[in-house]
Image 1 (cartoon, rainbow over the protein chains, first blue to last red):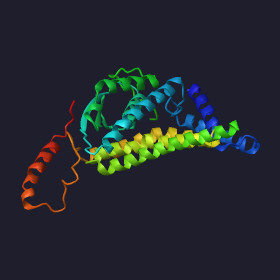
Image 2 (cartoon, rainbow over the protein chains, first blue to last red):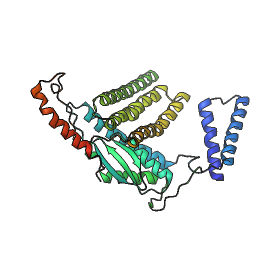
Image 3 (cartoon, rainbow over the protein chains, first blue to last red):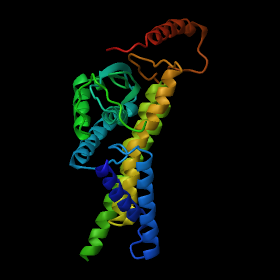
Image 4 (tube, helix red, strand yellow):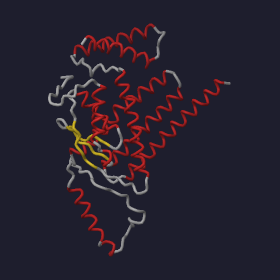
Length: 171
Length: 145
């Protein structure tokens, strides 16, 4: 809790400085500091402080972003090829993908990653599966989905024990 | 001299990235027009959301150099990564919940002469068989596990 509050404090301060760019105006700096402290105090009073409220980057999520960018580029090229070929041979498919993630943030990261790669869209989240619509049948490779799920879980430190879903966060 | 060269190279890379982004945005727009049904159109729109927008933003970041502007552009690129799949999922989820069934199975774009404005009565005889086939394909929208 205290750790999350400190992370949020540092992040908000850096965010304020980056967006405003005022580094030599004492009045504005003081007002900025007051607003940052006020926001952290409000978040603590509302008791919604957890790892979702204070999202911080570490090497893992940056590595996951780099990997995602390569995947996005690959599937973009596939989809654009299908669009621009005169015949436009596509084979829309619906498939169910197992989702063994146990935390909310792990589930959201996995589903958002599926939607972010063009050619696959997460339609509906059931208990431990995601309903996915794919543009080409070749995009519904279960091994590729499993790999993406493992990497997503690794990026947000999800234990991947599907049976006990712990819903954390603002309640 | 070398500073000028660096500046030219920077602008060249920025231009190449932005032209690449424009290509993907254009391809996405063409895809939205060509695709047969709502769900497949969302896939084409996804091209515009991801690589199109990100390449244009990357080009702008290179053009701005290391400054406050580029930091703001990095933030925009990051938030786009989070918001665009959420918006796509909201639209597709709404369509699915209201009962729109996706077309499944193989699809091929009709050849240029295939869709004439007024076909002769003889040609019409072929049409019902085709629509029946399509209806059959639409009748089984259940997921293939």
